[in-house]
Length: 231
Image 1: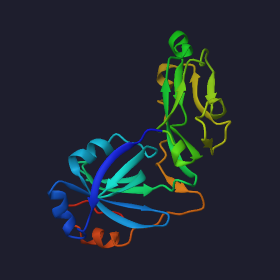
Image 2: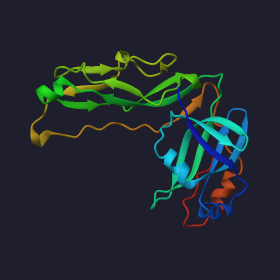
Image 3: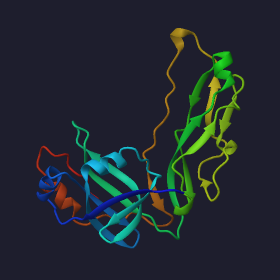
Image 4: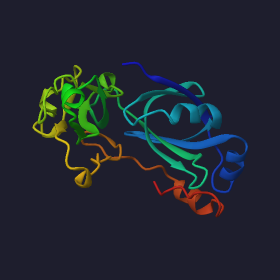
């Protein structure tokens, strides 16, 4: 799969130094992963924000830090509660030789005849799929064509999805992804709700390695800054 490229450099600023770092146009971040000591880094705010704001947790990133390149996934972003600017980012360094579990977003495409011709209501019940694969087989998203939904009551289940090679789905394949229902009386219509599941990634049989020292940074940050969670 194609990957996104991002550059940064090693970070020495901690604690109160993070305020000055952010003021100078940098975003503090950290890289962690199996067999890797937490690596504090900094990114250029403008360039990093343009990239990170458009990514999902299943987008593979080639993160260049000084002379070393890490294959990482965006694990978490902390934002200012008011301005919504990025305050801190966590990156997970994926092992290239082991399968990982990650949630991949579902993208709907095409047109349903049941919706177009019979005024059906399209209801999406799954927003993403939990899958297992090697990092090299990871995809940004899984696209589902709505064309098979020709009449009211038609649905597309997990088992109906043509998955990319190397990817194994981890949820019940009989689960419905999207269906078409008949319109209810106007006063009875309730907007469908798609449950959004936080993006998570884990190495099989391997837990997250917490960054050491981040607790000190969060405790020392000024009150007006959004506190960074303990790692």
